[in-house]
Amino acid sequence: MSLYFSIVMPAYNEEECIEQVVTMWTSFLKNTFPGKETKLIVINDGSKDGTKVLLDGLAPKIDNLLVVHQPNGGHGNAVVNGYKKAAELNSEWVFQTDSDDQFVTEDVLKLWEKRNDSNFVMGYRQIRYDAPARLVITRILKYTIFFAYGTFINDANIPFRLIKGSFLKKLLAQLPNPEPFAPNIFLAVMAKKAGENTFDIPITHKERLTGTVSILRWKLLKVCIQSFKELLRFRLDLNGKVKAIKAK
Image (cartoon, rainbow, N blue to C red; front, side, top):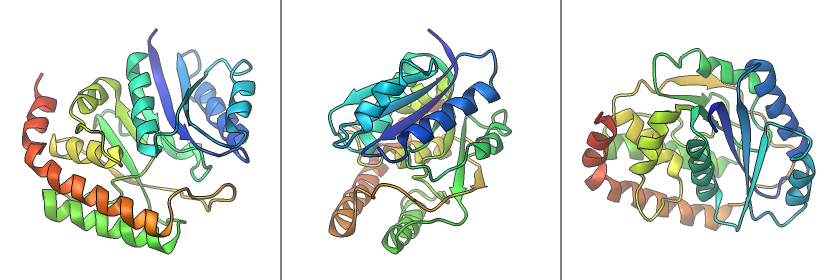
């Protein structure tokens, strides 16, 4: 099976909005790419609420929805497994977003317009509706990446990115082992260092109206320290990985 366009979407405890979000994104695929093979790949990351039941109810009714259930491994693990599934299905283009209904489908077209300029296109949250602690950590992360790697990425961990399928396979092959906590950051850094024109395209970020953020307070600080340590260690391997990515 080969797909023209796939969307990777991790989901964890989103029973309040998952039906609306799935319907919105699968409709977007059908309306935007009529006649093309497309899939919304939802990775249910061991949800403890009714998310699994709702997804299983939607799957038989929506032909471009693929649901994958896995034990809870965290957001990053779910994203990577979604990318791997998209690569396995030979997706020509892969888009990644989240299931919390904080983005709008129309903004994908802003990234799509740049697909011939770069294999890796990212948006950035011009106005971000998140807790103050997350905003501070995002700013720290931005400058940590700059000082560690000499490259500036406005919103390195944003779940709103468009990647050429063949390029994604190269990136996945170079992800650190063990898998980092926030793999999207590493993908962005490698893409930028490999010479991709990673665009910082302003997109809409909406206030979260349902569910709760799973990582807060001291747990948030702990995982951020872990991510910073992973990024600093990654400096030693980056040049070799970039060469492998750029190799034909």
